[in-house]
Amino acid sequence: MKKQYDPRMHTAEHILNQSIVRMFRIGRCFSAHIEKKKSKCDYRFDRALTGEETLNIEKNVNSMIKEDMLVTEEYLPKTKAEKLFSLERLPEEAGEKIRIIRVGGYDACPCIGSHVKSTKEIGDFRITSTNFNNGTLRIRFNLSISGK
Image (cartoon, rainbow, N blue to C red):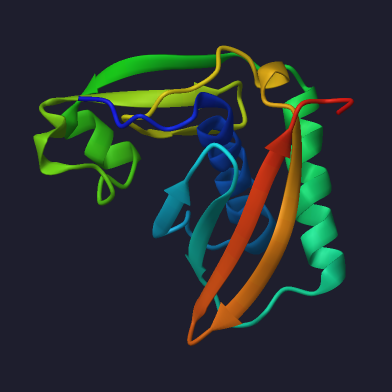
């Protein structure tokens, strides 16, 4: 059964994760709490972000959202998916066919959540706060409809 995440927020999480991977050469978040009004992602990291880094992440995510990328799904046999992706965050009951979500050519990962059809549906991404504690970087964020 699919987890009932807010599709806009959940797709934004995918873009945030890939932005962090590309900008800092670290893994995707190890923990996330995705809600309609506000969300957070936790990363294994070695320090707090600078204000400039936080702004650059936000700019990058918004730039990717504005690309109007299609969000698609495909199903791979588990044996193939585990060679291409980390499956550690999927529930055991995910089965032998693993759903891969692709955000244009920018991101691809296994996922059971709900997503928008195109990134233009997401709206504006905003990092509301970050903090670092004992090897964990937490990024809190929210969304607004463009122009509101």
